Image (cartoon, rainbow, N blue to C red):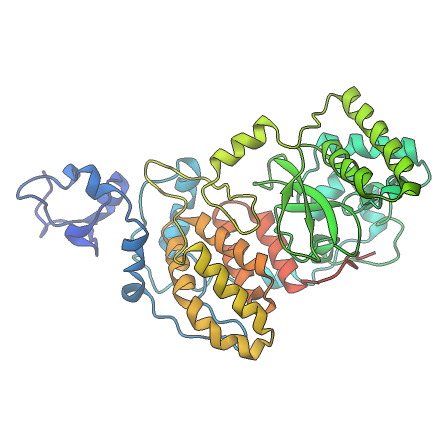
Length: 445
């Protein structure tokens, strides 16, 4: 039985008899009024122990946070975690905790957001000569782009060298494709450049307007559409889950294109073969045959959607405006890791579209009040370990390309990525939103 409350040195849970927690660690730290007469608090039934659904969580907004607009062009509450959440990140990472953290330090909610940002932006890289002397190309790519490239990336480069030894990056120029991004490191373009680059410049090298941090561009196409191909990964420390394409001059839709670069290029060439002019068709057909044969020799699948890609779709916790679906750690039993956004998809889409159509940043500010409950609710979700909600909101804002909300996008994504132990993505989105560019002149070289 629980000790008498007068002798109990634990802090009182602010939710009292309404607390739905079953996590033993929570009950070791916080005391609760007895339920059902003399029954122990641990006897809470499953219906009470379940995490509140969206409706219940929304009701907390007015009770917990009443945030004022603090920025002239970017009105949101900070998406910072509470001190309690910060202390529980390791526990969440090891075994997606079933607890909803009790915020016993609710006034420490604003210190995380801008930490390390000023250190990153504008920081000078080492001299190009020293970098290439000390680092192998693979190490250079990891250090500057913050991700490892998969084996097929290097196999693809080797094959392009066999097609065009003098300029491998132009091996596919007859099909309007150029090798860019990390391929520029293999091509020696950074080593031969007289410029010295800051760390964040590497992170925006060939980063298109709508690209989330998960997307690393490696091939550029027609500038009229902003077509580009890249690797998409859910975690910066893991291998890419698929190749994808986007046409940045049109919208932010991301389309999966197989699980390796050979599959993506072959799928692209197949479409080009159908639509290109007669003078170009023979060259495109020859390229398609050559890359198909090499993929077969290397035993790479040329399927647009593999079984692993289908398995990833089943793991997605949310549909997203960019159509790739969100995959984050999520305990389906305890429902910790993600919760639905405050606004329905159609309502949010309509609101963001209206803000985008207004165009003028000053006029857009009058519409931001409609988004305030969404921002507040998402801050609560992040504070209660539903970090995926912050990523979903950030992606959705990124998709609509409202420059007045770039800081908002950076805050929610940076905070969520850091709490998910995806720090490289946090660094990338910070650099991108600080230097977000439209168009296709995106090389730093």
